[in-house]
Amino acid sequence: MRGKALKEVKFIMNLAPNTDKITIWTPRAALRLGMLLRDSQVAKQVRNVLLDVAQTAEPSDTSDSQSQTDIAQMIELAKIQAQTINEQSQALKEQQKLLTAALANLSKGKAKEKKQPKWTPRSTSHLLEFMREAGLEPQPDGQAYVSDLWQQLQDWYIKTGVLKVETVKGKEKLIWRELSNKRDNPVKASNQLSRRLCELFPRLQRHRHTGHDTGRDGKARLGCTYLAGLKQILSPNKA
Image (cartoon, rainbow, N blue to C red; front, side, top):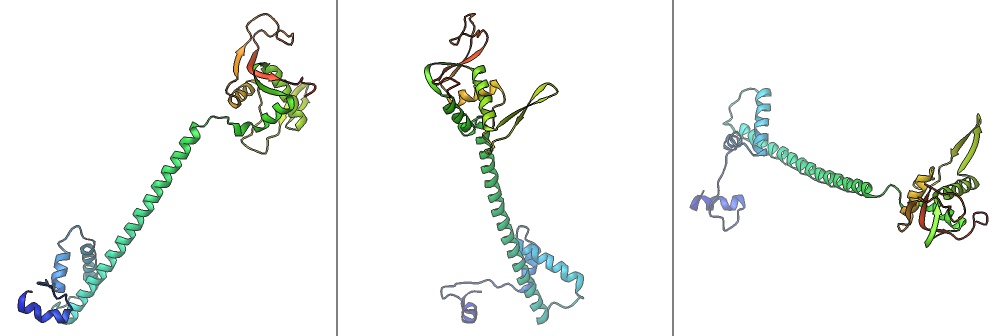
């Protein structure tokens, strides 16, 4: 509608003063368009409503005013349904974004856990207490044999209640009590002890005694492993 015809309906339809033309769709024309469009949610809902009506309603003449009103209501219903579908789709997209972000954060967290060493300073806190009581300190000129340290640590475990030794059928059975901190696991073998001490003090170095001479304590140490850089300030008895 343009010109004079447009002027007659501008006031009735409350159109903007600068409107120069309008296109008016009858309900039947809107339904026809709804059956043609492919990528419109509104058009899809129009077709669904038409199919529902065709299955339940009796044939009637759509030219009367009541039929026109029914068609207009169907179009409005289709619009509402399409809007609801669009809102649900947007909500689903937001949920998918949140889920994707959560999975990404979880993957990053697992990657960090894999990069961390099996033993960390937080998991060796009781070893620091043992070293203080045993008089052990990192010293550049120090040298401590792992077998001696392991025996001292076992004695310390027994004294503190972490380890209990029972004799069953003539054989010793070690019964361990886990510490309250799950990451502060007891050391249950001499090779574990040397590894954890080296991780606790990175400057320590593991060596194997290759000479036939005796160690500083006068014992034969051929093939024994010792830690260079660790020194016992106090004797085991005084410690």
